[in-house]
Each structure stands twice: as structure tokens, then as C-alpha cells.
Image (cartoon, rainbow, N blue to C red; front, side, top):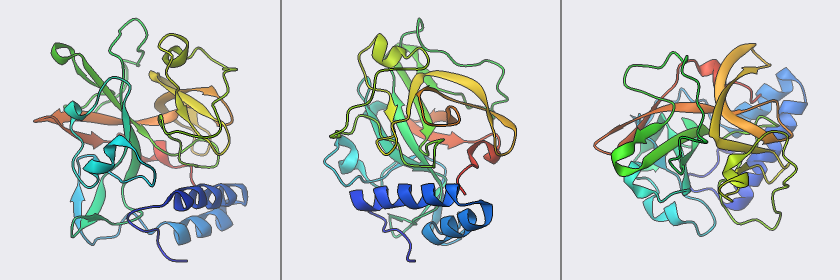
Length: 250
């Protein structure tokens, strides 16, 4: 099976979700084989390794496509805008090397301390935080690992779909209940996650505690893991504390 193209079509995204899902349900050995066939190893050495978040193109007409291949900047977003990006990816001749890095949803939240929640006992790398926060510019931005905790599909943020998210939430969802904004949505299976609430959970495959965006509608084993962020001259950079937080896809 060939590697996914650097500019994925909608069919590629759906195919990736379905194959990753089939792999996750078929057992560890088969799952790992299917996953490695779909995605090249993240240790591939070709190209430049970029520690900034970099915009990835999307097959539909979305606002961030004009930035594809560029660094994510905290000033790019309006309240509640989000974009698809990659962190720790490799780029060759200006193009993303498919299968490298961590796919992420970068989301600018409404900066309202009454509803935003994040734990304070996370062992963060120096200079990083769970959310980029700039009160002087009314900015708050989070980076969420873009792999569903149910069959590893690729959830979306405010991308038009024929299927609307369900509202029978299993936990408080201030993003919708207070601000009227759809949470992160897995259109393949219906899972939803609220980026306003970051909380501790346990990765059942490793027993590792991790922090992520609260799951407010299943299916899924829990929150979507968060990536740590900092900004330098408004360019958004990422980091992880423990890669095991993100290891549940095959």
C-alpha cells in the first residue's frame, strides 16, 4: 500500500479512519501491520524536522487552506476558529512527509475563565503550557491530538458535514451549552470532545495518565490528548511530556 499523498483528499481522510479503525479492532499484531502499511514510520529521516505547528491542507474549502505549509501563528485565528496542523513533522522541498509528526487541531477558544478548565499539576516542559494564554490580546489557544479515542479516526473542528452532532451529552459541554459552538466531532462514529475542559484521564492500553479534551459524547475511551504549546514571535510551537499519552492507534 502506498503512502498517503501530502495533500489528502476527503476520501483519503475517510479511508485512513476506516483502515485505522479496522486495525484497532483486529488485534495487536494485525493492527500494527495495517497501521504501518498506511502510515510510514515517524522516524523517517528525510526532510527538515519542524518543532512548530504547520498548517496542513484540507480537501474542502476551509479558511486555513491558504496557509498550508506555513507555521501556525497565534494571531491567525478568530474566536472559535480552528485548523488542521502537524507538529514534529518532517518537510521536504516545502512539502509535508506523509505519516510524520503528530496531527493536531489548533483551536482558539473564547477566553472566559468561568468555563475554561485545565489541571495545574501537569509536569510541563520549561516554557510550555496546556494553553497559550495572552490576556492582553484576549487570546487562548489549545492544541489537541487529532486522533479519536475510538478507532483512531480523524475528528474535525467546525467543518461542514451532512450529519449534525448529537446533543445528548454525557458530561457538561460549555462549548455548546454556553457558547453555542460545536465541540470537536468525529463524523465517522459520533464522538465529541470539548476543548474548553482539559482533564486527567487514563490511556487504557498503557495505563498511563494523560491530559486531554473532555469526551462529552461517545464512543471513545476518554479525552483527546492535549499537546503542550508555547509561542515565539507569535509562531506556535509544540512539545509532549510522554509519547505514550498518544499511543493507542494500532
